[in-house]
Image (cartoon, rainbow, N blue to C red; front, side, top):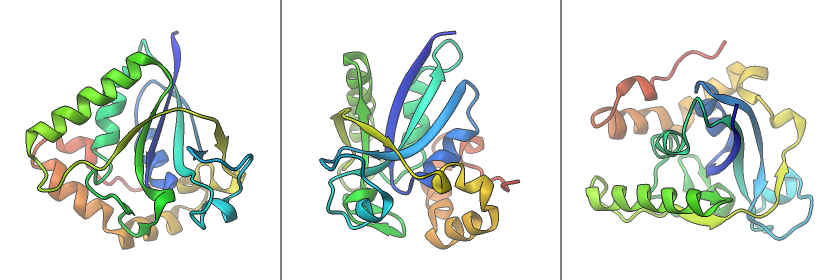
Amino acid sequence: MKEEIAIFAGGCFWGMEYAFSKIEGIIEIKVGYTGGTTQNPIYEEVSTGSTGHREAVMLRYDADVITYEELLETFWKNIDPTDENGQFLDRSSQYTTAIFYSTEKQRLLAERTKEKLEKSKFFDKPIATKILPLGKFYPAEEYHQHYYLKYPTDFRMYRYLSKKTDFLKKIWQKRFDPKLNEDHDVH
């Protein structure tokens, strides 16, 4: 097994955790905060937008089973990469999208996929997702970890109200593999 780490900020970390939870080769997912200046931030601080952190997911994955490129593809297919002010219902800097790289290879792959998306002219607006060096990742409070499993009804209601599923189906399913964006019931 070749264990590696990937960190993505894609709006609310509950939705990102859910999206990656369905992927074979993921060993562990932690939701948390990264990219800010405050040491050991807590949700109440990050949610004000004043710490500079983004909500993010840290993936420990087996690179012999899934590649970083495949994780990038899942990331892009689960966000609105043109939204510079947040994602869906969640507005403000802590919900903006970013790929946090820890190696030069990750940086190059992230830039390549972003450039490919920009050149595709698939979106009418520019790609707003940032590619940033990874700093310290702080795991979120325990009640945020595996939220979609702990509170399935609340999670489904949040996802429904956010209209994220509608956006993903409209934008991505017509262009890519529709199975990657199905909104499965959470059990």
